[in-house]
Image 1 (cartoon, rainbow, N blue to C red):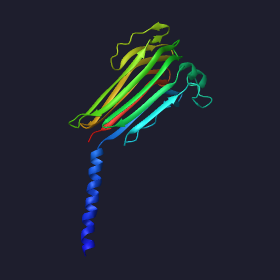
Image 2: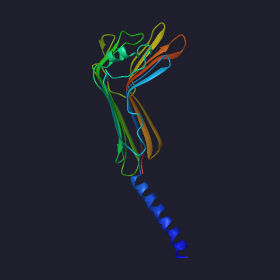
Image 3: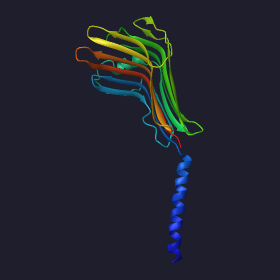
Image 4: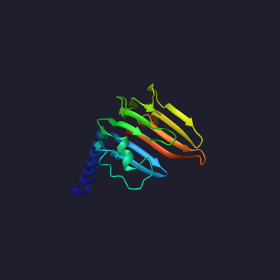
Length: 231
């Protein structure tokens, strides 16, 4: 009889201890960093991709050399291995991490030289993006992000970046295509006072086919996401 009486209390104590430990950890993390995201003619390729951060947090780092891209053969421009190796002259770096109530994601590449339909080229010394999500002392979520683009050149002309969010650098309609370039493209989502996420694209280039009305090329340099649910 004593065993039957004691076991329910023991079980309850274990469950309470487990719940307390879970609440002590308390945070649920989400994050991802991709150095280059491309979609051309419906074929998508991510280069320097950390993948998704586990909800338990941790750290994921992805460094990729332009000589070790491992891209499939036969992908249309501008996503062929030859072109990508021209785009990226140095190691690509991406990282995402979550710990102690803070999620951070970063992506960076240097020496960008990108041929785009409708443009002669797009070039930059470097493109980087960072996104962060954290918890205030009152349990509310705080979101922040930024991008840094050095020495941006479009069609051989230098372009000054103001540093504002969702800054449209170019929106040019030609006969067959419309080319749009956006810097520091930022999206914030708060699902509750204690839960939210932020996505930042360092540089986002789209080419729309004016005849079909469809996006034929979609390229993001420095794509990062960070999210958290606070305890």
